[in-house]
Image (cartoon, rainbow, N blue to C red; front, side, top):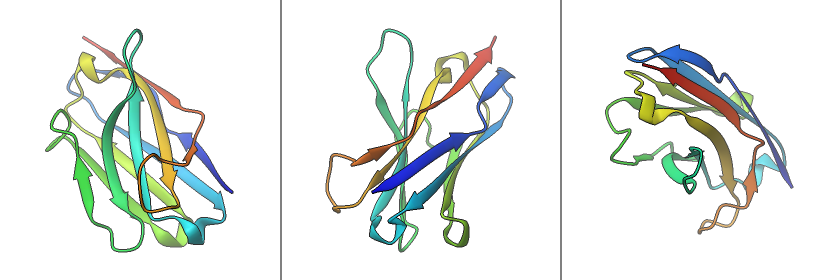
Length: 119
């Protein structure tokens, strides 16, 4: 199994920045991809960004492209989501997820961290 713990959420003004972290533990050698998802109140959870754990290739939702950057530190078994130019529409609970099979859906999820953006 893989355990995921997110941190770094909080309150920020529109136009500001936050960096989320997700620390993985357990069978991290089995991870293929890791991703960030978000869920706003009354909305379905949506994909934000993902990174291939082994080669580092990244993929972004159009809504966050050019504002968010996903990265990894393999030595720390941690991924990050640098969020810049935040908008009120970015406010949500952000979840980290890990894929250990190489195909959707993701297999393990963190508990989530709240991001609030004030206008």
